[in-house]
Image (tube, rainbow, N blue to C red; front, side):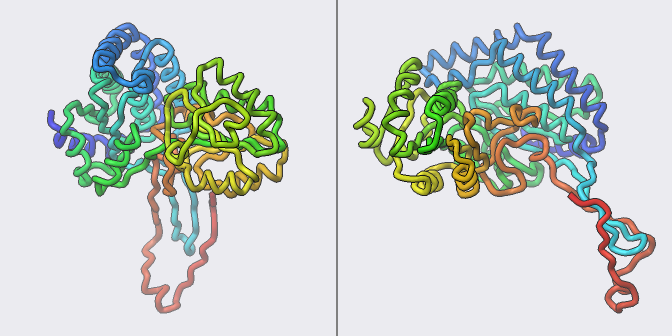
Length: 428
């Protein structure tokens, strides 16, 4: 099947899928979870082929980390599906209801976007998360994974497709594109695809955003910051910063640049270095940082770099405003955190930092759809559109207005014979 036929089928399936009730969708999600667990050895075997091929091609370590899809990852995605099953069915939910006049009722309800095109690199877990979220939110999905995960993506797709179609989900609701040329074809399919979600490197996402007329939801960078304030608990700060950097370095919510207030730096930085040395983290620092701890020299490029590796850039700042200005200048709008005991300082930071996720005294790694209770996420949006931050079910929904009356006509209101009441019945 070529991509155009797949897209046409997805469009037809999306219309049917939008009308399927929540119980049926949950039944399909349970079937996916069961099938993944049943076929875990076959999945691991396919993934080992992809890993072996990537290692032969001397792929970078961050890519290999994202590519690995073993027993733990399978457990994680199954857990995400189970969480998703427990969430209320969002489709058809009334968002507002207004009486425009007697017997003239306007209702706004949540509805699926339609057909979602997802183009992703390296991470097979993204295929499962995205498929499950699209199913729960009533959307059809066209998937295009990277060639490095070809075998893993193929078996995951086959498992999900069979499990859901056996339950009665419309055929064609999910499709996997495997040819490299399909990417450019997808970008031109605005007739069939309603939203594109790219997941991958900075260059990859930027390319998608610049080469399609289809609305794109995503982020090109994950340059996350933590600012350690002068009133921070230094031990707590070491704990938070270490987790933000090393818990999993190859993801977009990992810490890349640390900002430290000049007054706490002499106390805090030696403690932090001792912690990071256990993980062999390479530290790049400004001149003031290098006067306190051993570090390589950081330059302008470091403040603009998403390392996705055991590397951390550190800058000492004079005050809170300098930290905020640095983040708003160099940050990607993803996730930024302040560590401080001063609630007013934290409130000011969280108000003025222009990011989709702003944290106080917690690891940046919490910026995640599953951890937020969304079931899973299709990605992270740094755009200021209907969805921002980790995008779960709500980000895959739009809405429609329904207006019901009894022979009402505009002429009566234009002449003044009738008047609008605009009485709110249900509001958000």
